[in-house]
Image (cartoon, rainbow, N blue to C red):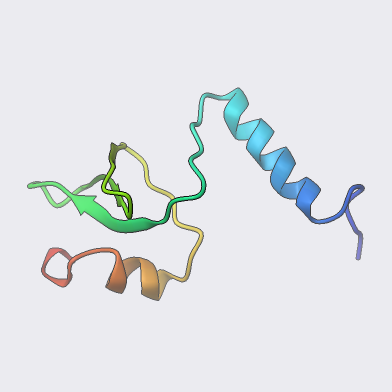
Length: 78
């Protein structure tokens, strides 16, 4: 077992720097209220708790799949 230099937070920092270097935009401090599904049944973005909607071709969830699928997507759209 190894521990990263700088503690576990340094892993997150390294991931953030790596993602930003390839153009990924990271938003923090506002949770996702809903994953948006378009008329073709494709994920098309997210709606945040502050009401802002963000369009995206790719959505990555780091939370439990049960919460992602059953709480963030309308049941009729699954």
